[in-house]
Length: 385
Image (cartoon, rainbow, N blue to C red; front, side, top):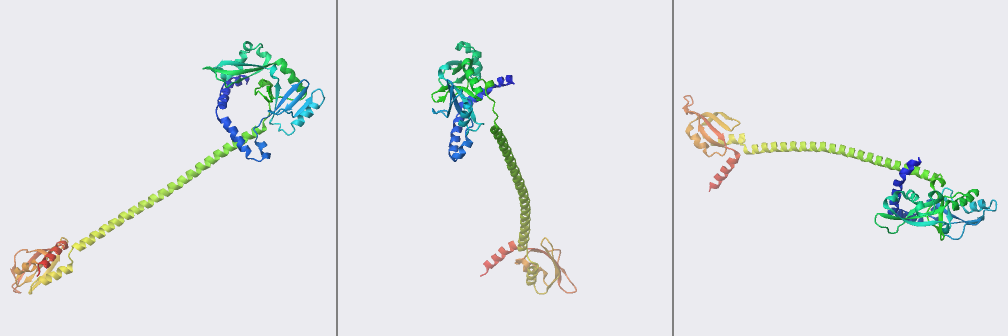
């Protein structure tokens, strides 16, 4: 497990470094502070940042506990007095959530060695191990004799290199303090360096000596995050289902409308066909001479003493008249000016009938179309005085 963690540490450090260099941490911190400021004061503690640090410092046999950035102590006690450390420490931290409580042991600045180093950029992914290899060259101590931490500085560095600070304290000076705290029942989360009323911000304790704390709140947050992700997936699936249902409904409506449109187009075509047929019949009726008009005109023009034995009109407008007349030759002149009969002529010869004493004839003609008959009628009316 340790080997696996060591192999993953360079990549993890690279991700952490890029995250800290990005503007997102600052923005999220500012945004969270603004949101917390909108809450009632009693609620703001519920949305705190999590870790609540307290600084512990020794002066001889006495200890003082204070908040970062504040000079006045929250509690002071003498470890020589039996029971006093537990009472003072517990009373000072009575209102603090034990899950968020973090205690840092501060070392006086003179007991700590701080040295700036210039390292290649490739060393940034594994600064702790690289500086450990260089410990005996950069300090009078070996790596087994010190507790140390390395932090990267923002100061300018030559191209291809980075500037870091080594912070180290001998184990001989730190271990007795840790032992004294253990006898008092106090566990520390970090060993840091005092800087004015605050701390430097490093942790000299190696990972194996740091207390392993359970994080029920983190577990709850993970559960809530998983529930939120699950709800988000369910919402997305429901939204997709609704979209698919709406699409299916629209497709069914479009298919129904397409069928109705086809039916309307069929009815429109049928209506156009019927209208065309009706128009054709009306036009044909308009352009066709009626039988009554044809009989009336023939009756008016045939001279006295003429009667017909047969009068026929076929579909092509061919007229056939068979009968007897006293002067059959004058029939052509009588039909010449007709507005409905044209192209009159005898078929065969005119023969006398011995029984009646009249002339038997067979005359053929054609029905004059109405479109041609009207101009002729108009011309004849225009010629009249």
